[in-house]
Image 1: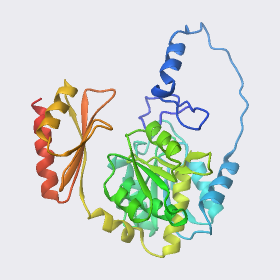
Image 2 (image 1 turned 120 degrees about the horizontal axis):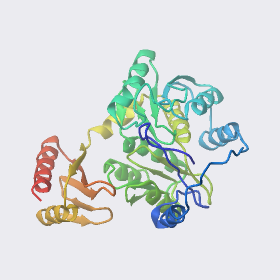
Image 3 (image 1 turned 135 degrees about the horizontal axis):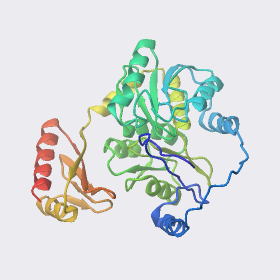
Image 4 (image 1 turned 180 degrees about the vertical axis):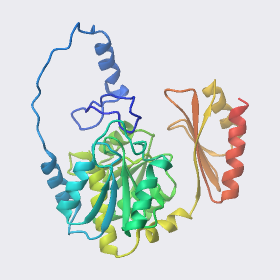
Length: 355
C-alpha cells in the first residue's frame, strides 16, 4: 500500500502486508526486506510501465454495510476526509446507508490545504467540530491521510478520545458475543478495560503499535481492537480480521440510532471517571538511565515492562516508554483526580530532566 498515513506532505512511503492481513513489521521480516532493497542499485532510468487498475469500492462497501449493521441506521453525520483518500469512500458509504452526511475536504490533495492530516492534532478537528454544531449533526468524524485512522466528536463538537469510543464499540460487539476478547494498547484510559470486563468481555493489553495489537488480536481471536491513535480493528470471520474506519462509523451510527440518546450522554460518564494527562515527550540523552531513575523512585508501585515501564498505584498509573526514532521518552499518566495528575506528572518530568 502506497501511503504516508497521517504524516505531513513531504513524507511518503509503503506499507507491506503479510498473508495474514497484518502489516509486515521489523520483527516479522521488514528488516530483511529492507536489507534486500538496500542491496539493489538504483536503475539508470525508470521504465514506463502500465499497471491494471481495479476499482473495488462497491464490493468493499458491500462488506462494510452487510457485516457491521443489522438495520438501517438513522441520523446526520459530518465527515472530514482531511483531503486524503477517504472522501469518495465515506460519501458513497453515507449514500448506501441512507444517512444524511456532510463531507468536508473530500477531494484528495497531497498538499493538505485545509489542515494537517493527523486527526490527533487539535487544529485538525476544528472544522468538523464547527460543522457538527452548525448543522445539528449527531456526531462527526475526522480521518487521517489514508483513511484508516478515525477520531470522533460528539454532537457538541467535543473530541472523543479513542479509548472511550472503543469502549462503546466493545460493549456493542460483546452484547452479541459475550466472553469475547478485546485488545487495547497500554496507554489507553483504564476506563476501557474496566468497561470491557463489565460488559462480560476479556480485556487484553497490548504494546503500543499497529503490528503488536493486530498480531495479539489474531492470537487471542479477539472480537475487536483499538489504539489510542485512532486505529480500529475487527474480527470478521474465524480466520479474517480487518482494520476499518468505515466499519467503526457504521457501528456507532447503529448504536446511537438504536439507543436514541446523544453521543455525549454516553461518553460524559467515562470522561469524568479519571483524569488523563496528555502524552508528554521529553528529550533525554540517555533514555535507559532516565527510565532506571524513574523506576527506582517509584519502586513501590506495581511494575510492568511490556512496553517501556508502567507503574500502577492506588490513585494513579503511568507509562514511560522510549521513542524508537528520536531521543525522546513518552510519558502517559492517568489519576483519580486532577491534583494527583498534576503533582505526579511534575515529579516524573523533574526526574527525567535531571537524569
